[in-house]
Image 1 (cartoon, one colour):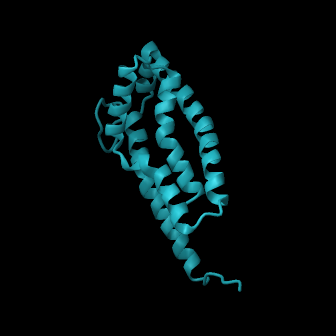
Image 2: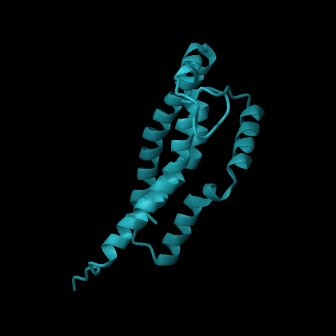
Length: 158
């Protein structure tokens, strides 16, 4: 039997999605506005527009190098995290397990999301220090993948 949602609910769903998008993006709009302001602190309404803060950022070699590392890590995490999550999610989704076993496997995969991010970061840093691992793109990406994989698996399976 093909059940469809009543037509009167579609505008409500669209309105709810629009509200969620607005409340999610509103802080970004504020940050972007304050980054274009001439004043060194946040003020509303802005007292003029300038790009000097971006120019100052671009002139600092340390900040540009840090941004380059962040972009490399983001690319590695996006590609490797999605691939690993897909390899985990496919068997979970296709397995002929009972509901209890499938739920247990999903919970095991999603456990890293239950640990607060600061605690997880401190634990990973302690682990890297204990084994004298250097902090580089590979180790930063590995730490990020720990939280990225459960998110993607959760989206694909749960």
